[in-house]
Amino acid sequence: DAEITQSPRHKITETGRQVTLACHQTWNHNNMFWYRQDLGHGLRLIHYSYGVQDTNKGEVSDGYSVSRSNTEDLPLTLESAASSQTSVYFCASSPGTDNYGYTFGSGTRLTVV
Amino acid sequence: GIQVEQSPPDLILQEGANSTLRCNFSDSVNNLQWFHQNPWGQLINLFYIPSGTKQNGRLSATTVATERYSLLYISSSQTTDSGVYFCAVFTSNDYKLSFGAGTTVTVRA
Image: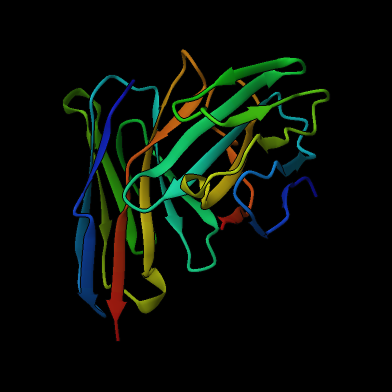
């Protein structure tokens, strides 16, 4: 069965370290998204991609980067982790121009100490 | 960007009670979804509802697109209904979902 997987599920890192969160989907979806979830804010969009070699900034992109070298993967990198980036991160994918089939991963809980 | 507001932020119910959750949005949208986030953090789609009314068991939803709001009804609530309910709107110009801050529902036995 097709799926979207995130790894790791939990991670603790130190301030200033570079961290990469993985997202892999086997739906063959063109669109992929990274969100962060914080109490009182719901899910906020960090970065997104409409296809290979395409990346775009979302509303809370500072301190994060992504790259899309193939259809299946959109890794999220925190260049220099900060305590304000402690959050739960969700990856999502969708097939095309509407939101039907929008699918979320199970999330990665990141703690920056 | 589009603003999505949910109310109330928190709701405590006695098992068996009914409740209504509200979602207001600031601009025209192509679609609207309601999600339930379970205690394990998983986001589960409840409804795609750009307009009109849909029902699924004890849950139903109504969206009045012309007035830019949607309602989620929970009837005869059960403890398994506990969790966070999110409203998210979709606009076709950018294929993105914009989320409200959520309503945290606690159902007590």
